[in-house]
Image 1 (cartoon, rainbow, N blue to C red):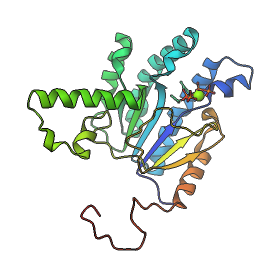
Image 2: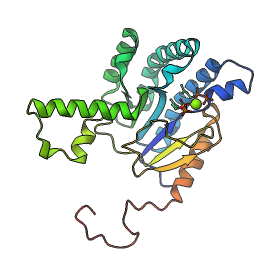
Image 3: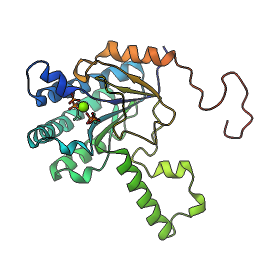
Length: 242
Ligand code: IPE
Ligand code: IPE
Ligand code: MG
């Protein structure tokens, strides 16, 4: 099995999963959170080098106060617990998204976790929190404009690589496989720039039920895809960009 270097997952369906069991949505988030912890061990064992998950979008603040409170409680607990799994998996953890919107103690826990794990490189784990791709691109554009204004960057030097380096995912290769669970087939503002040439896999399985067999199934499906990046397979490329 050819394991993709970078797998991105939109963790969807926690609420519906809980509802189908007559449980509150927050219960679905709790079980989804436990599943996230397990999937990191599985990804590492499979040899995946980069795993990026979408856990809370810039649009998710529109949810009820109860659900948001439940999610924040869960983030607080999860960020602390993640220290152990980062050590056991030798996993570097980074948060992408605009974390300035979170309470001070959550921001502190993020800092502690990122600092603690920064020397690990068996698995690079990115968690998208208060993440929206349009927001990320706008923030990058504003920072770039600032750098041009104060002459840290010349307009003529702006390339795709330079632009990428202003994104939250700076230094992280683009995903090879993007999975969305629970039946929806849209990006919901996830990694719009980074997913330009990524293979997509959609499954009806809700996130709390997405276990090892489901991840392996997605990778097997990915293996059957014919990735081309604009060229024709088997033909030598004559362009400089290859
Ligand atoms: C994904 O599950 C987790 C978050 C967005 C926080 P949902 O909460 O979107 O679950 P559904 O899609 O309503 O079932
Ligand atoms: C996308 O899921 C965001 C996360 C999984 C964190 P949503 O459930 O919020 O997306 P929509 O509203 O169905 O598009
Ligand atoms: Mg959803």
